[in-house]
Length: 553
Ligand code: ATP
Ligand code: MG
Image 1 (cartoon, protein in one colour):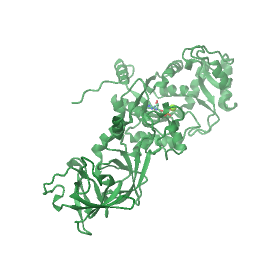
Image 2 (cartoon, helix red, strand yellow):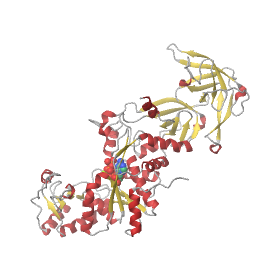
Image 3 (tube, protein in one colour):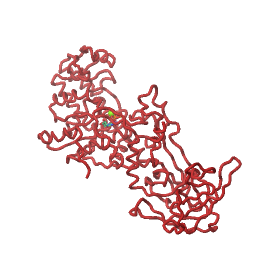
Image 4 (cartoon, helix red, strand yellow):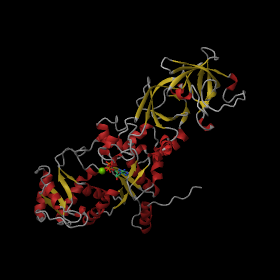
């Protein structure tokens, strides 16, 4: 029996709200700004918002926060929808904050009419200099006391396009001495003669984040508007605007954003990695983006599990990426078929196996019968892993070495008889003999063999490119280091093996299929695979190599 999980603080709030009758149902939203691809931090927010709605029988809107016209692109909108879907969630409505421009403009007019907003002609520097500091009150702008009529007239001129960018803003008239700097007459509209990806050239004034977000929540009747901790100081303004406008009382709640070791988690930084060529694309398997992780072979289930396991915190923290990798291994262990592949091949010739002959051997696809079996061809010449042979075996070496015996997985026991080296001293060929009576599942030799190694038949194997990934950064928290975060990029984060060999059952495999390459790790078929060329990505190794390193010290 699994223990009942305790409620997180947002669940506690929701249960109290439902019990008191404050709300009768739960409506959350996931509000991405379409200015980049989603990352694992967004996955946390998605799992939380959609998860809460699912748990309490409510719904979640997908709302594109597209109020900033120059940055947003339709490519991002499409990728965001694909990623949310792939994570396994369905939104109630697909909405765009830009669809509310008309209503938001109306709200602004309402504030002006109530004497709660004014047009300020001061430029950005002047506004900043009058804002004061956390310890010192701000000063009123000389334009603060314009009449309603004048403000309405000027705001209408702003909307009509009569003024250039930056020449005027609309500000809420709150309190220039407020303790909360966000309450010192925040800017709510600015002039920007820019094309918008959805509204085209219809608007040349655009609402600021604080004047769009809460109002969009209200328009949609969002009950619990969940965001990250940096919005705590915005909450007072969120509530003030809703109260003054007398609109649906959405409430904002904040949780700690997800930070993870050995990566960066801001779209701005991820964009730099893409644009400056540190990675190949947004979906480069080294990226912490959902599309990158998908391409690398992470499953949606494992990402959801990870988000669940890290919980909902109220304080910033840094999550160890090995926890994510643990979740991925756990899921792939259940679902990935076991196959054989050799990444660093050296030839093993079975001298007593007949020339030109081959036979099909039964091999299990997984740890138990439910995975089924497949046939793997065996023949005289095999590829084995170079590191499975040692010329002068170390103590407790149970793999191949002169005179040693080893079991070939799903096949026979072989004894190493000799080997050949090239002029540079590299082993080029290993010769061995096999015991025909030692076939796996039908072994009558009675030999006790300690080591088992994987192999592929040279005549049958398919050549494949295999891409091994390591952490993208050399340090745990590149954003916290001195200087540019890009100075801490791991130059060896990608290793391409152009000539690996995989067993022939992998012919015509579908993109994204996950496999366990026995003894090597979890791999998946990359989208760059063609009928002529197989490409695999290593998702994760079988064990946590970094944890071992850390222990060694
Ligand atoms: P970034 O800094 O990466 O651009 P953002 O917060 O500007 O992130 P948005 O598109 O505005 O990105 O975010 C959409 C939602 O996802 C917001 O509710 C935001 O709070 C949440 N979110 C973004 N990053 C994280 C994170 N690292 N952990 C948890 N939630 C996040
Ligand atoms: Mg943002």
